[in-house]
Length: 66
Image 1 (spheres, one colour):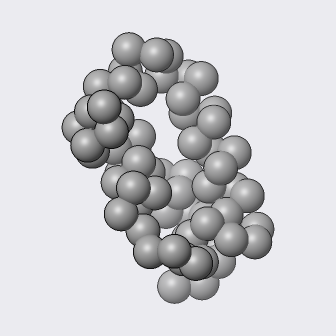
Image 2 (cartoon, helix red, strand yellow):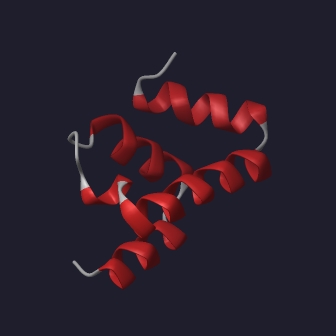
């Protein structure tokens, strides 16, 4: 998958998908490094702000973060 395809996936993923990839992604994954990693982090922060605490907490519990 190219960086552009990874960024497109990030842009279209819902909260649960983003959290699942972060929770279960391997150490050193290209999803969390370089330009893609910066975009991933920025998108997570923006989505968390947009969703609000209640929705974010529910999504976190769904992926196993309590």
